Amino acid sequence: MKNGEDNHWASVSKEDREFLANVFKEYDTDGSGTMGSQQITPLLTALNSGEAPTSAEVEFVLKSADKDKSGKVTIDELKDVIHVWYRMCHKKPRKLGGVCVLM
Image (cartoon, rainbow, N blue to C red; front, side, top):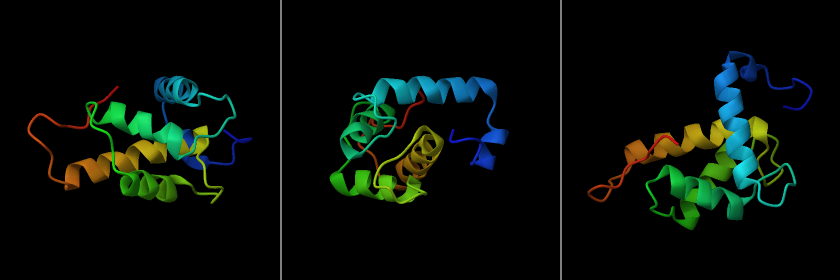
């Protein structure tokens, strides 16, 4: 969180903040504090039972969650990445057995 800039974080439980921090740490593979499309793709794949998202899906999620329009997402925006992805998963037809999963 950037100096408490995002007030919506106040509604996130301590456990959820810890979960998001752990997920971010795992997928921010270069330790830059941001995640671009190359780092978001494996996260979305994991959330999608191993089925990789299309490049258009990754781009849509990134653009939708990137509130500061930096081209990457921060830990503050990770909650939005997951939220946008789950909305997308529930709207599109899935292969038999393919489903968005909770980590």
